[in-house]
Length: 141
Figure 1 (cartoon, rainbow, N blue to C red):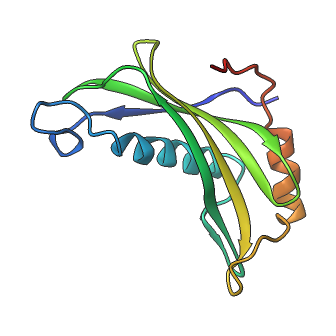
Figure 2 (figure 1 turned 180 degrees about the horizontal axis):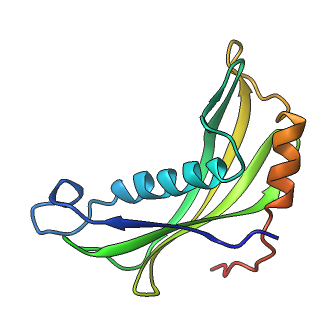
């Protein structure tokens, strides 16, 4: 079983609004980076594009709990929690000093590059994704 993947990030001026608070859409960038780097740990160098296949975000559920601010050191996390033949679900979060800032789940779907329709995840990747599943219980509200 794989441990939670953690990516350290520093908040820069470009990430914030005029008040020095991280702009909400930038959290999506942070969790995208963590998800991409998680997939790299499985040995896949170009996680979004594999020749005739692409991996695209199907849906995102995100809860904004606290704000990060200019110069914060934060951690973006990624954990695979579910894998199907054509998709996988990733539990993600952004933390500051173990304080949960955002909590998210992202569904990623494998599609045909040409037709843009769902297709099977290549078997070698599917096995690595299945091996990386973390058994966790998510709080739901």
